[in-house]
Length: 125
Image (cartoon, rainbow, N blue to C red; front, side, top):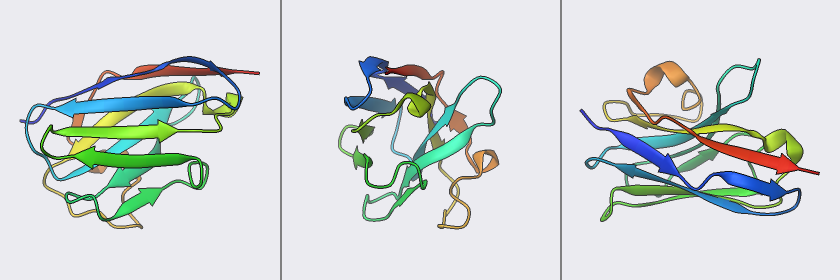
């Protein structure tokens, strides 16, 4: 079973940037970033297709975040620019090795089988 692990979180001032990375134990198909802040449900941030050609973003991530992957390294990244205090959350890497995800479904956490332990992102004003 595929395993994933995130890195790259930290504390940054509003308007700054962070780059998150996720490494998988093996090649996997659809991968995504989710986030969760205290008292809120886990929400999808971005998702990328197996070949990297299809990308989905939440409304809050569009125009500010960019998801990418390098299948030669089993790696996925999330470049986050123009960060806001409301982006503060634990960010999780997730993999859905047996799913074909579409724009209507990629944000459903139940479709993902593998989850990392999370990396904290804190944005202060």
